[in-house]
Image 1 (cartoon, rainbow, N blue to C red):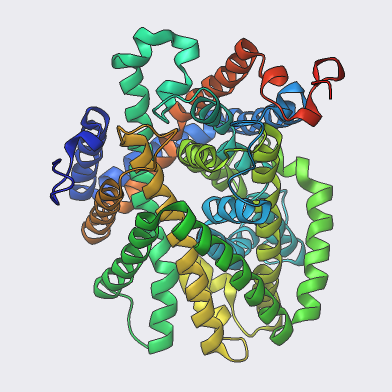
Image 2: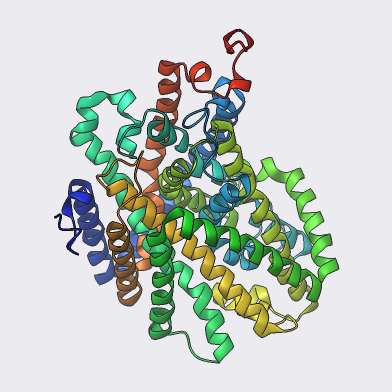
Length: 528
């Protein structure tokens, strides 16, 4: 009888050659950061500011190239390639599939940015606009929509075609970056130290990103809980909220995709939709709909202005959008492989086109609606003087969230529902993260099996301990900046996986051999 059956941990289920080095690297980074938080933050900010000053043009073109690559793979001969057996049905319905990708792609962050991101821009608007002006308010919500649009979701999905092809078509046992790049570097590199380095880079970025996400997501809940019960935000409250979250995402990850992640994701779509309708009906509905319409028009007119914005003529400083957008792209890059690996895992039976376009369009649509509704509520409260959002945000961005929600009729209901939605969003993000890391570090055949449940719980515990330790001793802010910087090597790996996907499909002539019958060229279809 194996150790796992006896209740112990089966060490053969974990690839310690990549898991332990990644964990040790994270700990080695966190300890000096936590011991010297101020100095570490200054150093990290200095490095990141240098990147913004010298390479913002590179990040901008990087995201545009990814969007172009996504459209090319979707609408070329590769778009109809099925990720799996062309005769089998997709694993999930389109609604379930889109809901899972939305929950993974947006998480609780959309709840924060939708409510308050516009205010940060309005305080420091682009193109010489006066702070606090109506034009600044329009730029604010427009940027809030832009930051959740095609570029960032292209970052998330464009490594997925290679990962999904390796897993579902070539049936390789390991769902790893090294496996996806085998076609480029060969067996010796993939099975040797080079492949291990690629996999360790992935795990370090994801473990640190997960800890940062848990640490940054918690205040979305704690600030509203503190407002509800008229208590202070402190570490004890943070600990309680975090442990509840950990329990939820551990259970969801333990149950797996079908019984956990899928059900939570689809349920949250209905709940979020009901909350948006609730805000429109009991809040300033007419203003929200008008402002949403104006913002969509303004975004359409200025999309390329934002997409290509470097503020090159301002030699004496930078605007919020200039610095924040580059950080946003860099931070998103650290999550790119996680999103792509998870998207690959759930895309069996989908075509390349369905996978890419669903990830580009579904989360974008939902994020624009969320930004329109919640951002419109905040702007209206500012314009009427009910909530001095701009001043609150300049002091404490998180404090603006309960201030805006408490201005609604039935504020208790509004905040409770908001807390529930944010909790589920973060739960689905972290259980997807836990599931993916367990899949990545496991030694079972991932083309046939689910990752070990024991391993999922171990990963959940590691993320939790890391996040709580950093929140307690103060190492989170430097790690947040470092996570953005770590996106740089991930960018190179992304482009490698895009090339690998094309090369594998070319080798297999997948556009002929692995497509649905209706998508085959006329002269290759089976005769009835």
